[in-house]
Image (cartoon, rainbow, N blue to C red; front, side, top):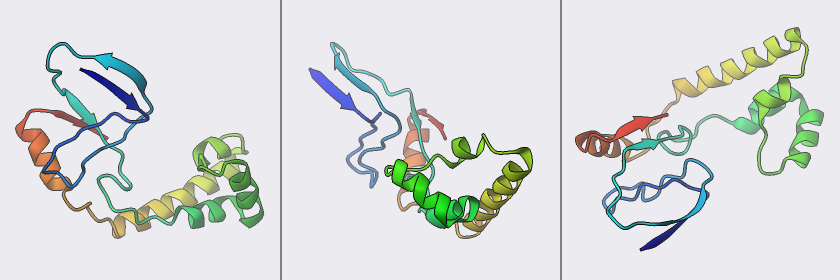
Length: 134
């Protein structure tokens, strides 16, 4: 039996509302001669285990300013790596940026919601002694 896994490390369980968990980019073709045992699952938080509540565009605008945000977004339409972007800034400017990001994260914690089915999936993985990571 051959499987092609592209752009995802997957966990599939028919009773889970999380039918596929994509966590990383993997491109390979694997031939299995015996049943493979799932040893662990690595999760992302926003949109996987928790309902996304942080307004990332607003956070980026607050850190970068409107003009720089639009410029960076135009160069990176698939997403902005804000931490990578600000690492070249002066220490004082970095400190202010990290404070702004921390404020948005704290506000997100106040509104944090667990994704429906996440607790059941965790309990299922735990019952099968499957390791979990964030």
